[in-house]
Amino acid sequence: MKYLPIDKALFVQNRKKFADRMQPNSMAIFNSNDIYPIGADSTMPFEQQRDLFYLSGVDQEESILIIFPDAKKESYKEILFLKETNDHIAVWEGEKLTKEKAFETSGIKTVYWLDELDKVLYELMTMAEYVYINTNEHYRASVETETRDARFIKALQQKYPAHSYLRSQPILQRIRSVKEQAEIDLIQTACHITEKGFRRVLEFIKPGVMEYEIEAEYIHEFIRNRSDGFAYTPIIGSGYNACVLHYVENNQACKSGDMILMDVGASYANYASDMTRSVPVNGKFSPRQKQVYNAVLRVKNKAASMLKPGVLWAEYHVEVGKLMTDELIGLGLITKEDVANEDPDWPAYKKYFMHGTSHHMGLDTHDYGILTEPMQAGMVFTVEPGIYIPEENLGIRLEDDYVIQENGEPLNLMANIPIEVDEIEALMQS
Image (cartoon, rainbow, N blue to C red; front, side):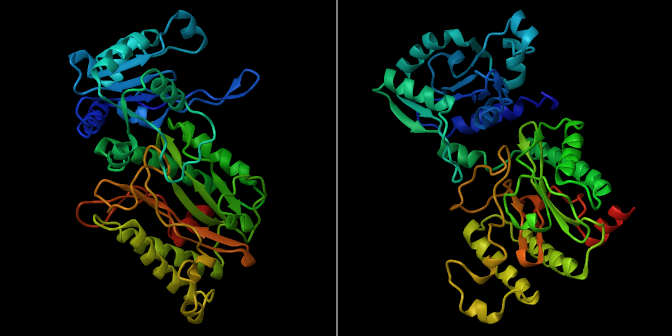
């Protein structure tokens, strides 16, 4: 891995939080992700299953974690099963975790090779009454491939049909959504790397450059700072492309007089950052661009100040909608009459700001969190309002990442990333 070692105390603490919420006499099982094939002998780069990483720090394929707090044997309370390493694997794939290194990474003392799984699992299943299984229940999830977890669950329930099976997700949705300080530090590192990428491209952008060239500048800066790469597929859209919310082709030339929207974030140690900035291709905002830009910036700043413990996500978005409504009226894009006659299910402001303002962020860019429950200190949210005016070839979105504090204003993890008009112009023209 490119990232520096993480103190295993984080993963020990995360497992304790999960174990404390388990039913008596139950165990939980978590699988790594597969390495997914592309064609012939090609595969996609490995990405660890985030729940397994959160609970163990293990970042390699063919790994299984078992948590069994009430196990009769002390050595069975936490178990890792790993792919056995050997000299041949070391030569062809690089070194894998040894049992000693696995303990240094996770804090788990009991480590078996995978070929011992069936024997040990049988013994564990005779002791356990309940088994927590792990499925993807994220509100944005759309899973079309059968995961390693899904295959394992199918085989486990077929072999042990008399057990009672429970869901890990209700626990994970709560504990993963509130970050430990060590996690916030990792997200902050990802944000610092993103800042370096943004400052680099401000010096690079000029009329005639291709959107993909800007993407290349970002990934160069990310990788050279120990990033895992992009936290998500980058959006780099100039002119009209900035009005396409999930534009990812990044294949057009940037023209003088246009704005370019860059929704880009570095990943570090599997933790995401999520930034959006919109800048003028020629380094100078036109009066109209500046007017719309500052309207978006005002909404972002006011929306961020609302992120406090006890706030409900749905009610927060209603209030942000009111802020945006006022700004759009001021810009002449909608009228008070439009607002008076609006459809409550699709308010007038949605014509120019059609997406949500905030989402949880952490190990996943759209991280775990129960949206019907109040916000809590330690949660990390994006704030990303935008105004999109296709008829003007103008789309502007601004986004920073914030940690909710117990008292006072949220902590902006991207506070050092330039965002004010004057600062951006000065940096682009220097």
